[in-house]
Image (cartoon, rainbow over all chains, first blue to last red; front, side, top):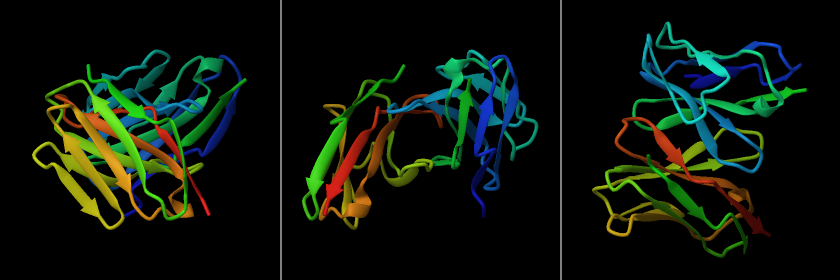
Length: 109
Length: 112
């Protein structure tokens, strides 16, 4: 099993651009999550999903959108990127224990 | 919602010493408490977890204790090694199944 995979590993965006962060898991987990981690800080939940077709907001959803059309994939969409969205983004999946991907580092200039 | 406080924010020990990291939580209904280790440039990795029906759990040099009455839980690492140096996060799962609330993290440095 590859576990949770994320692409890209690193991206630089200009203010106002859009992009999609990809997340795929091969463990057949129903639950999937997106977190952001700012330098020296903990993890904040952006969005989560309890199954295909079902998503809900976490602590910091503003500026982001998600979709869950399959069990395996949970992409995170950034519309109109802002410098405040510079962060490291982690995707995770779980049955009970959460397993994290390697992260995507995003820099918005 | 759930709130998790973690202390200390940084911890420096000599190789072979023990390290203890403590967390408190606010939601008395929380029932699952995992600990994650995050190495530089990587995603968090689960190292140990404990459920609310258990007071203590050990895995080689790592142990976790839970005090439900006081609403706190702790990570204990014995015989620390330089490769234990990392950021450690505690977390608690409250009433929403699957959703975790994380502490702010502890930077552990083990000096050879």
